[in-house]
Length: 204
Image (cartoon, rainbow, N blue to C red):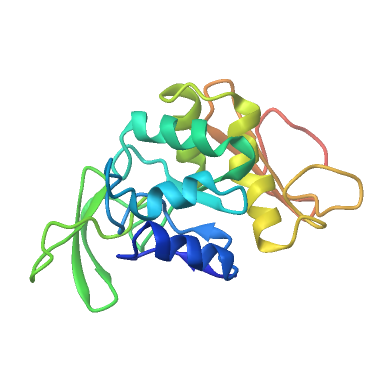
């Protein structure tokens, strides 16, 4: 799968990449030129093209809520995939971690490069998708059906595995997660077997 990300390309070069077969924008807005009114860069090209699925890191750090709303509104719910861009500190407490050869400090859940010429730059994330799900509903106010699509059906389609996963349908893998009324994760099923069984469910 050809993607556009971590790029300095301009609008026209990005259009050429899409015409050549690129189908995904790797964490849109991050690690690419900003959207400017006379130099729209890759962001405008990726948002406007129906062939592109745009990845968004919804952790409250990588994207301002208004930018998330802009991307969702322009691309539409069928073209957004929520991702984490998580590094090894995902789900862990604050502290020092490694990202390849780099030392990373995690403070208040935000991972930043600790030293060198890029010190202070965001170094991936500590986000998990259940947190992204909850934030999209409780902070961003997105419709639950759109959020579910961005976390399951759209990524499955993009990866070419929608015949097996991405939705609950007869014949597909019985992979699912269960959330409570507060949108906290309480259960995980993989291939029809509970990995984490919700307390309110009895039997098999």
